[in-house]
Length: 200
Length: 281
Ligand SMILES: Nc1ncnc2c1ncn2[C@@H]1O[C@H](COP(=O)(O)OP(=O)(O)OP(=O)(O)O)[C@@H](O)[C@H]1O
Ligand SMILES: [Mg+2]
Image (cartoon, rainbow over all chains, first blue to last red; front, side, top):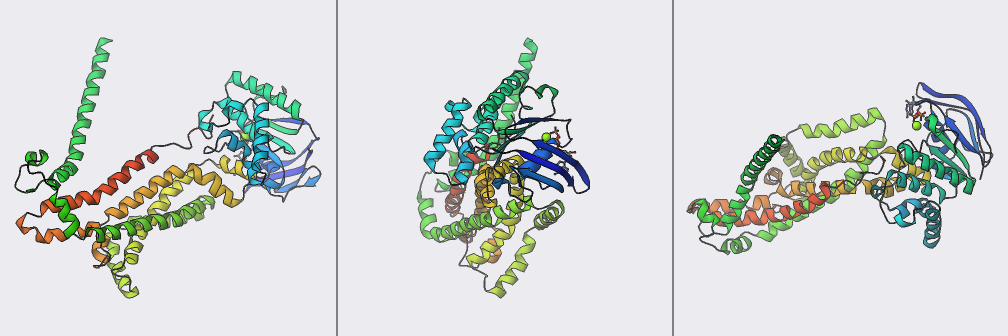
């Protein structure tokens, strides 16, 4: 686990400046919620932390180490995308184990860790299904499962509840809260809805 | 309410009637072909007699096989079509994937260039190709004919594939990047499987286009590389008496049978939505 330190970070797409030098200090093990209206650069900030975009100014540190020029896979972060980004051709188990498979973890170990995560998220019965056979809430849980099997330094959540109906949103919010209390991993959680804020 | 129901019924009837007519219209030629191939006196009978198989015989097929050098033409068709599919995929899949990765203007330029090839009616290309192939010693060879086919397939397939790759949401590859994919992993393990059914359908389409191609074959195949579509014309010469039509029909049936089999398998892949539900909740 590690803290994230964002110092004077700027991001511009060609001429369009989206992030104008922000500073955020996220302590190790903290759960930080960023709220803002649509288009204010929340996703962009998460993508900068994840390394999907390069900063145009300032620096980002994860666990004290500057990651500006580090490839996403070396940053040891996991991200839950706005639309989940599940691999449609892989089963739930394969989706969750993919990162481990890429990093050369052996099969029995992958199975063990996937099973473990599935247990935490109530996905045991769904491991052999494909994403298209899941409900929105279940997909959401798979996306979270994919993040936790890797046991990363930092979790990034990008408005993960915006695709769910109101009732499910309440339920998933509670689950994210539980998950955090169980794992205590540094988490950055981004949302535009007032209703998402503060509860976790 | 009753009225509305009746109206709905009537519409359904009309739709079915039209579809039925269309079915008869589109199936009649191939069915007549089959009927003609199974009768000994194709030309002198009324279509009804043919359909009822009044002079049933399999002799036409025997003749098509034995007299028509069937396997010679078949081998040419198979090799050219098979190689066309393989090469088209090997060239176009990475090309199209790469195109979706490069920036706006460069992509537009290359895409347009590729597509522009399709503006030319390809009859026009046959003559210059013939001249070029003569100079290169490729005229009358399968390699030459294959190259001609590729000049049609590659722009077409690239254009189709760019469309496929564009349907893959960017988020998918980003999830892959965060999961630790190398560029190769992103291509091979993440994106390619998502468009797989489209690629299979495309492969089948390319095969069928090559299999049915006639014009290039006529110009470029010489006598050693002739495919089935040209082979069939052998029987036309001897047809003054009319007796050969049965054999031609049998031969034609043999030519289209593999294509129909192929198209039937294609159906399954064309109608399948792998990406459905991948991204939206
Ligand atoms: N690749 C890009 N090229 C140019 N502009 C971009 C790009 N990505 C984002 N932007 C711009 O940056 C701004 C912030 O985008 P971002 O996606 O971070 O917003 P957001 O806060 O996540 O909004 P939402 O709540 O709607 O998801 C927007 O004005 C957007 O148009
Ligand atoms: Mg966003």
